[in-house]
Length: 100
Image (tube, rainbow, N blue to C red; front, side):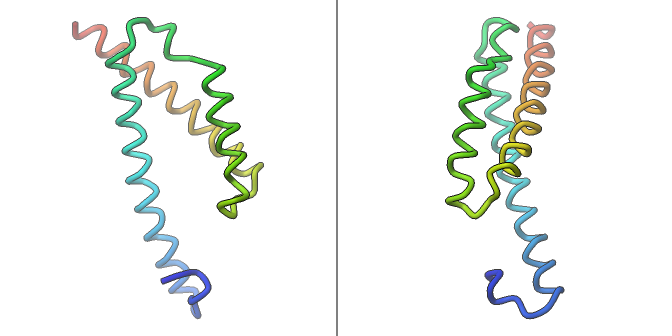
């Protein structure tokens, strides 16, 4: 169901719940890329790349309005997501380094 077709709050909530499941599946896929990065990188110092972080956030902000997302919301969400991804990647890198 599309948002414009919703006639009840139950339909709205069902749509939101379905999208949340899809978003989590995509976030899981994104985290698998963090696993790959942790596996590929040679040095812990490579995990935090401020230029790449700025590029990711700029790309998201640029495409936010096209997708009907307020740019400030996209910026805030991705600031949190990228920082959480960096922390996750650091943990994965450290775990892999100990296992080798």
